[in-house]
Amino acid sequence: MSSLSRLLRTPWVQVVLFAVIAVLLVMAPLVLPVFGNQTLIRIGVYAVAVLGLNIVMGYAGQVSLGQIFFVGLGAYVTAYGVNAGWNITIVFVLACLVPGLAGLIVALAAARLGGLAIAMVTIALPIVGLPLAKRLDELTGGSQGTSARFSGAPDWSGLDDDQWQYYIVAAITVAAFLLARNLVRGKFGRALVIVKDNEAVATSMGISPYRYKVLAFTIASLYGGASGFLYMVAVQYTSPETMNFGHSISLVAAMVIGGAASIAGSLIGGAYYVLVPQFTNTIDASLTLVIQGIILLAVLFLLPGGLVSLPRAIRRLVRRGRGGARTGPPPTTGSTPQTTPPPPAEAAVEGPENTERQGQS
Image 1 (cartoon, rainbow, N blue to C red):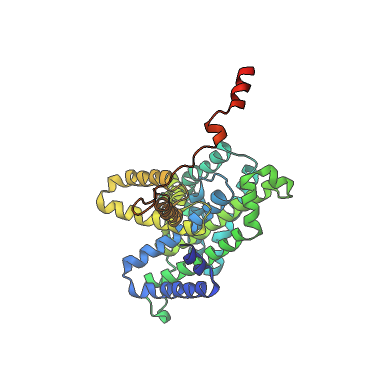
Image 2: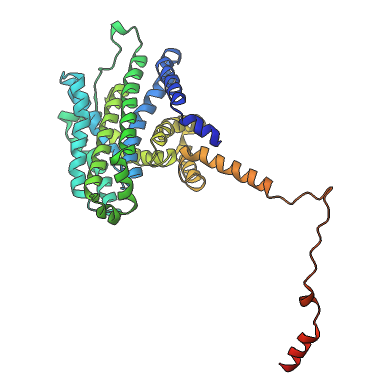
């Protein structure tokens, strides 16, 4: 296992793996059916949302239960901009910046809080956002929601709509994951780890816990807005139910199951968010929540690091098995019996001098 890990870390192997993955991503929509493409699109949509949540919870250690609010806000900004006839690039930028600005405002007030206080602040976001979206019917379409059709394949592409949507989602998702990878592996990510572990130590090192908490929450909000834009690419419709608080809890569960503080775990979490309900609905839709709860408990007890830690857990089990095989009893066939050496004469037999000392004592 160790030799395989060293091989995977060599530059040329990483280049080959990256090229293979790139080819698979490009060719996948051309060979998959419509349902397969739509499933991959939805995985990309929610993987970006889970990734943003992972930055603020997994890496920064802050509690955020309102990520779905920023997803819904990004979706509404996208729908409004498209219906107003704005350039789609400007719409995408605004779909990220508006939720990011909202997240910054919330973070400036909530980052000094901790524990249950910040949790209650983030819980309030979708709880307030849902009825607000219903009341602002001129902007949001009210309870009926609003649609925005803009992601159909152009004639010059020669692609179907699902294939064109796949390429849009894949391009933005890959860019989002590469950006997050560079962030968490750089100075920003190291500072987040220190703040998460011990704020007093971070302060003594010149790192402002308040500043980095605000930045982490704002970045998570930006990713939520990007996920909302991708949601409109895929669905082309949004309603107040997009901000339902239950979806936010499902995103947190997906992050935990995929793996907190893990970029790859965010992708696994997005796949879990999409695939598990599809699987459970084929069995019995009424058991979806029960099965999801069982999966969450199983992962928390057996794999606290999430599904992304499964390869490490398997390696540990293999090492234990090999160690147990080495530490077994020695073979007896053909071996010479071992005899214990006799005790020294002074200890085995009491001489006259020892007897006289005992008598004097």
